[in-house]
Amino acid sequence: MSLHGKDAYFALEDSAGTVLRNMSPYLNSIETSWSNDVHDDTTYGQDGHTKRTGLTDGSITIGGMWDKTTDVGTYTVLKGLIGSDVQAGFEYGPEGNASGKVKESGSCVLESYSESAPVADLVTFSATLQVSGTITFGTFSA
Image 1 (cartoon, rainbow, N blue to C red):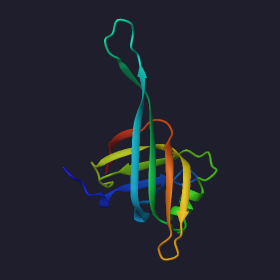
Image 2 (image 1 turned 45 degrees about the vertical axis):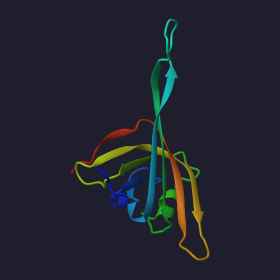
Image 3 (image 1 turned 90 degrees about the vertical axis):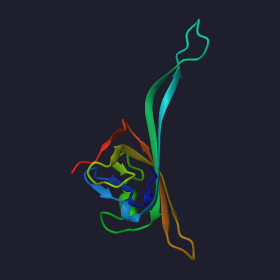
């Protein structure tokens, strides 16, 4: 089944680490990447390599409209994470955040933040977040 991205949801804790801020109204791209470390545990007598997974990892890249609205704007929320050691909570829902929809969540740190202000277009931003700890895969509840 195909899914249209228009309903995607992304929320990120502010620098106080207390409130999930819905960033979705300002975003036009969300890209997630989840991975496992893979270790070779081949022993003598094997005819082929055997593998074992290790720690998980992940990154999230978000982009969209630059906005400085108090408490919720992209600039406001992300600037507080620049130079900070805060592990901000996140929630991501490729289908939105209605009850029963897929939810991917955890904590992350800000790796990079950039802004673009072309003379004949809108000011936009892009940010990359690195997951810190375990990624939780579940569903949104009511």
